[in-house]
Image (cartoon, rainbow, N blue to C red; front, side, top):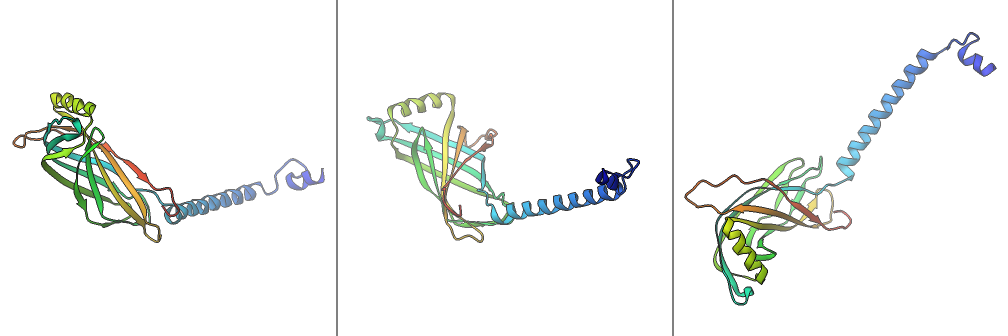
Length: 216
C-alpha cells in the first residue's frame, strides 16, 4: 500500500504524471528518430540492391525468315532497335558496369549477338539508357520445326515476340566483388514500314538475374 500511496498519493492523485508522461514521450521520440536514422544508414551503406530495368522502346522494321530443311538451317533478315533503361535504386552506392554483350532471340533461338555497349559508371538513384540497333541479311538461325511454325503464325499478325538479353558484370562502389548480371527483356514488336510512323511501344519490365555470392 505504501508504494501505491507514494506514486499516486493518498487520494489517488498522481504525483508526477504530467512530468512522467512528458519524459516518456520525449524518450520515445528520441528512440524513434535514432532508430530511423540507423535504419537509413544501414540501408544506404550496408545493404545493396540490384539495378532495375525496363524496355522503354523498340522498333522492328524488317523480320523475314527463309525456312530451311531441316529447320536448323533457316536464315533470317532483320532490322531492329531497342532501348533499355537501367535504374540504380541505391541511396549511396554507385555501380560500375563492365562491357555489356547484347543478344536477340526468337522462340528461344538467338539470331543476333553482334551488339555491345561499352563499360560505364552508374550514379546512385539515377537512370542510365542503353540503345542498340542491329541488322542482318540471311543470317543463320537455329530454329526448331515448331519455331518455324510459330514464326509463320506471328508473321500473319505482323506482331513478333522477341527477347533481348544483356550480359555484364557489376561492381558496387566500395566493394571488391565483381558480380555477373543478366537482364532479360521480352519485347512485343509490331513490324512497321520504315516510311510510316511506328506504332506506340508498350513499356515492359525486365527480369534481373544476378549471382548469389558475397558482395553481390
